Amino acid sequence: PVAYAVGDRIDVSPDIYTGAPLTLLVFGRSTCSACEASVDTYHAAVSVASERAIPAWFLTPVPHLDPERSFAQRLGIASHQVVHIAPTSVRLRSVPALILVDRDG
Image (cartoon, rainbow, N blue to C red; front, side, top):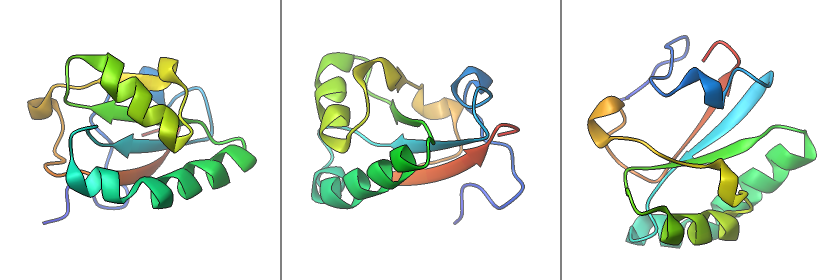
């Protein structure tokens, strides 16, 4: 099932996405084998976003952020743009995932 359809509002803190016209949200975990296998693809997506001045954030259900920050840096995401999210706080149920949102979420 689709967690979010076009036009749905993302259920993460608006502080993450309201500061830019578009924001790339990368959901993942450093211990996820599918996330690890997707590093090159996600790095390419983050690079394209960066070229277009679109900020990228790494959102993770893992509460200990040091390994998550290291993983996010491999994707090209700055360590200060890594955020812990409670797994039950979002509709998304599997990672890895990329979601592009506008400033309205």
